[in-house]
Image (cartoon, rainbow over all chains, first blue to last red; front, side, top):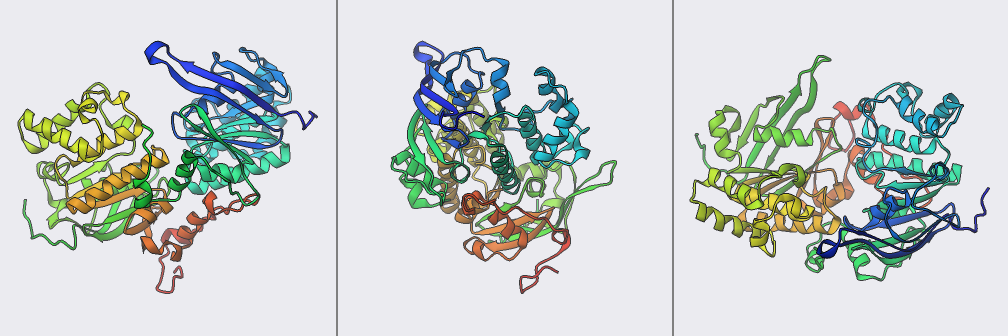
Length: 265
Length: 292
């Protein structure tokens, strides 16, 4: 068991640029934060704010970046080891795109086990399917035979099957209906409690993040605008004008509010 | 085309509309017996994916690939079912327009924005190219694009999602339609941009007296925006209510949809999930708000 005092993830002065010269895009601009072990950390922002880029950099999908990323106190190299993926797994936004269309659920779940050389494939698949509440009859079906919510359960199962400590969740529910979203969020919360997981949850939906997370980082144009603590009632003490605007916008259509919006285009 | 007079109260009248898709496993009944009337107002059709809301919009435009049958399908006094393909084209685009969900897939990627707008304008309005250009620029201004000339010469991949959706709306407004069907026009957009796009549509409804059918899955959002809400479940309208009275919704499905929003959940406790009942498939609400 790792020491809970060591933060699961530390990000120090992370910058990620794309392009060069006039075309230079600062996707992530000097961002620092720490994620305590067994907590849930939310990254919110509008599209293009760099929230997914941070997650991809953490997962090793973006190799060039400045700054430092630490996993449980140890600095991460640009090439990730197998041991890293044993500890950190990612769930992507669109369950329609992230599952192999010509692999059965059984094969999708068996693949990470094969890569990491696990022997007890049979028990692990059965166990993980039970954890995400997927009936056993789905095991030999293809992704197209499943609904969106069931597919996202498969994606979560695939991440969980290696028994990781940290899950990187990139908009796990934004492609789903609200009724299905509620089921997936409940599942994620329940799993976090049972398996003492650490989450980094990326979302554009402030309501989802404040329900799920203890800490929220608000991003805009690659910069971390504000770091918020969420209290027991799911309330935050936001001060930054951008966060306040996001808060207002998620309350619904109000003409007076819209007139006061500052354009960020 | 025959006009039976302009009845302003009923811009659109739909009675017992059905859309069926035949398949080898028996036909799929995507829309079942839905009826509604609308005037120059903003109504919303809300439901989960697969509830038939988009198919309803397409059926009105005569774009549904399935078998469409209806007892009545009247638009401004015109019987849409009796129209020839040619007459339908006169209405589609000119008098009824549709905005699709994702600007990325609905704009032609290899044509500049201006070129495709001019094309639409010339087909619909039979005007010279010069007139078409000025009309297009005017419409881009109407959707509050600050630099219409620049946007006019860009390709769709060069503009942001919010800008793309404004371009789509501008394109649909070229011919000043009487009815705009917007199929999830803002679901691909950020919250603030989403509200700004809705504000533009709101102005257009007010200024031009247009009717608007907003198809959406976001119940609280449409409640704050539209006049009336039709809630669809499994191809039927299960509840029709005034937008301001959303909190007085009677149907367990509508209530269920509202309760599973994370905004209404208490932190640390599971969110209420929707327990679907078979009685929702065919049951109707009586006056006391009970399912029968």
